[in-house]
Length: 392
Image 1: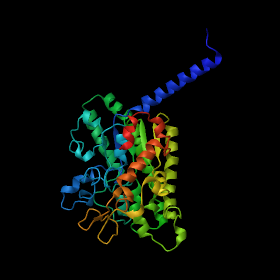
Image 2 (image 1 turned 90 degrees about the vertical axis):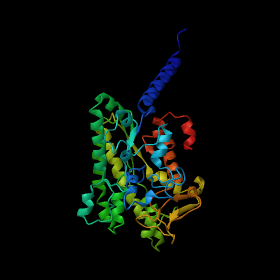
Image 3 (image 1 turned 135 degrees about the vertical axis):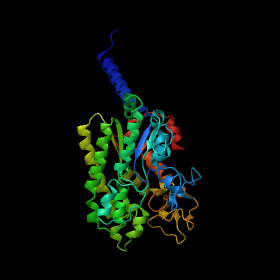
Image 4 (image 1 turned 90 degrees about the horizontal axis):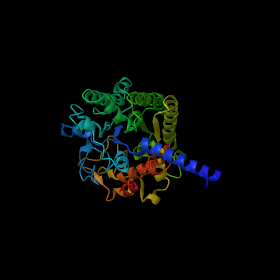
């Protein structure tokens, strides 16, 4: 008996759904590796190479890394960062820092390159360091690198690897990997804000920062990259360091729901809006590329607007402080005078500028599970064994 018209419609619907799901799975289903660019929010050890220098940075010492690794690893947290949780979610190993693989990329094998690399460095900026020097901003640390330098590193490594292997193989690596570009740009604003520049001056940086991110995206697309995730800025008005620097007795300056500085969060929103507009423009030019916006701002606000729901009892208090229980820039955490809270998992802020592992885990969960990416990453990504026990 021939199937009825409704049955045919149903069959076609199932066939279309299967084809669509297969298409998504083939594109997004199994990333072979992750390549990451950014600053201290995603550095997994590139700055750690300075630990043998005469003046090592604070992140070289405990209590950084105490929660998960039980030793400092160069991560600006008590444990893992968002990038680590994304890798775990995708069933991939933690992304290795560029400066600790193959002597900074020199002589790295195609096999090693295919496992992915992290080029993020603590203190990194979107703009060239000369930009800050020319404007008299002198609080940029000597170890900082620009996004342009990070792109130079991957180009250098790519050229070295692909000179001795099939170019199609290199293309396959980039096509099948997840590239994460950021968060980057936050330090550009931090250095200006912590140099007592006006909000007008800081706001004038936004088009320049977004342009640098846009140029980097275009460069990666030209290399054959198929998927790029671009995180937005954090809510700067909620970071304890800025709540300390810009403390005021005027209650109208603060959001009554979460105690954050409204004007500074408005600035973060402005950056994120401009970034998303630029991503839309790039999508129109390169419709074959999967360009994903990661909403770090609202992923953090989700926590701060209902901290008890997520197990946090300390909203704007800092876990790692100095003996006077203060925090400042550069961070006092990691010094002999450091005092650490008993349970970092109850704190959102680790050192006043960076977050705890517990907070980073929730941000990653928001990106992977909830509607904090555009397009929604949880729809595009349909693998992992029960998402590895929900990021244990």
